[in-house]
Image 1 (cartoon, helix red, strand yellow):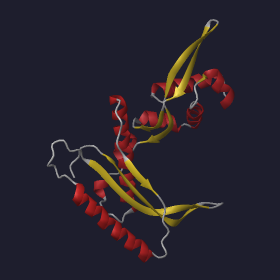
Image 2 (tube, rainbow, N blue to C red):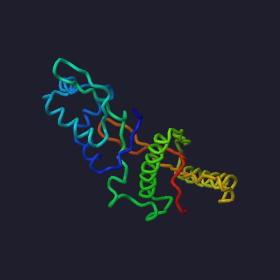
Image 3 (cartoon, rainbow, N blue to C red):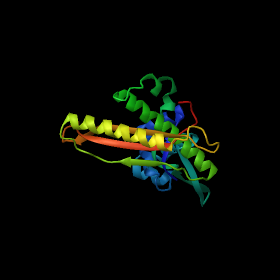
Image 4 (tube, helix red, strand yellow):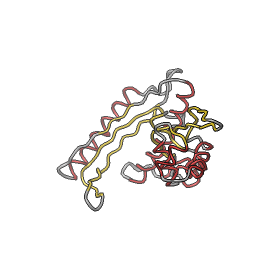
Length: 218
């Protein structure tokens, strides 16, 4: 079982968004049979079997073992991942294209970059798993509180300058035939503040993430 699986197929995404099937996926973090699931989710076993077949067809659950009980063979299944993310490729016709924004101060560009990251890292994880290789990634997640908007702007400017300096220092520029292109994303956005009624934006939250990306033209 993977920790996180990225769903790219539209039909699989639709199956995972069904409330009953989403509940079944959550229950199947631990292997279970249809009869066991029926008790936990409060549905007839036949209906649970119907949903299980749909989830299995889309690769969201897999067979763990078969148990013989009298004249009946009981199938024990498990979710293929503990958690799932739906890739923008599942909505390919309307998924955001970062090239359409390219504005470092645009929240929409930030979302487009985040969507691309989900899509690319999902493919990389799948490829690494198929090749039985470890995927080299790096991410930083933290929080910082700025006294003023001017401080935030100054921080962003200094951060950008430092990232540019490091890129200039380490970027190979294609000189080495064995070099591997990596994707670098640096993001800064307000953090969400929990309240009893709603989530409102409050503090500032920097996020600096880099990961290997697909070979693409810059």
